[in-house]
Each structure stands twice: as structure tokens, then as C-alpha cells.
Image (cartoon, rainbow over all chains, first blue to last red):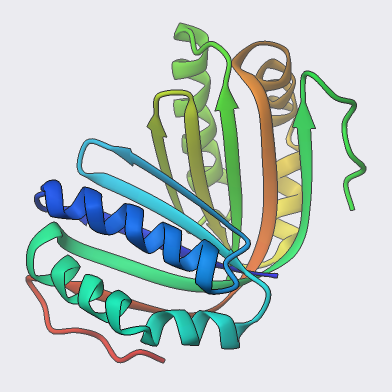
Length: 105
Length: 105
């Protein structure tokens, strides 16, 4: 499984950002092979994580016309700067106070 | 380069959390080989990213006595649940409105 890590310094978020972010999430999860999506914003900092089965899915998603348009708006209006990293998940473990720990593999 | 992705659902954060989080960051960056650390919290959601040169550094950091104590407090008091993922960064690119785009390698 791959993860795309988007770390951004926000410039200005507006109503179009909110609509676009919701649409991008819907598209990625519904029409592409995105496995999960998590986004957290605090002040001017944003981290968004999306999970994918392979790099081909990530490239297809990056090239989708609506997503290309959103990327252009992001550069022009919403973000001062950002970094995108593509990483291969090697291992993971979880803890939940409502469930026993899973093995650390 | 490796990234450790910590995604948590927060239960309750207190003053000891704030002190411990600052100390853990200082230790990781100052006495271990952590390359960078970014943490964002929104409501009950937290994402923290730490970057490392290799898996040996990550294991040494995980096993440090002060960090083990912090992990136990995290489970017992601060977090309802969390997921930790270790991933290998395959590629990255950046954009900044104050600098030309770097090549997408």
C-alpha cells in the first residue's frame, strides 16, 4: 500500500476550497482506487494523507482533469507552499482502548 | 528516508501532554536521528509525521525509556485510539509561491 503525504502552508481558504476539497475526496474514494483519506488542519498548517493500492492509481488520480484544475487553484490561491511525498507503507500497528492491541508486525 | 505516520483519535490532552510532546520532539531531533517532525491537531484528530534516515533509528527511538513512558501515558490517558505506520519515501516534490517549482522526480 502507498500513502501520499500532502503537507501545506495555507495562504487563504475560501468557500470554493471547501467545495473542491469535498469533491476531490468524493472522486478519489468513489471513482479512483483511493483506500482512505485523512486531512487535518491547524492554523496555517495542513496535513492530508491518502492511501492507494499502487503507484498507477496515484498517477491516474493526479492526471484527472478536475484534480488538475484543483491543483492549479491550490497553487494560485489556497496554498503558500506545499510538499507532496509518495511513500510505501512497510508496516503498521494500531492501538484502541476499546479493542485489544493488534500484533506489531 | 523513512516516515513514521502517527494518526490518533484524542481522548483528553492535559498539561503533561504538552510538556511531554515538547520533550519528545526535543529528544527525537536532538539526541536521535530524527530529520524533521510535523504535528497537526484538529478537534479530536491528530496527525504527526516524523522523518528518519533508516529503520534502526526508528527502533532505537521507540525503545528509549522516556519515549516508552510517553507511549504508556498516551495509551492510558491521552488517546482513544491510534495507528502507527512506517513508510519508505519513494519520491517527493514541492511547490512554493516564493520559489520556482522543483522538478517532480
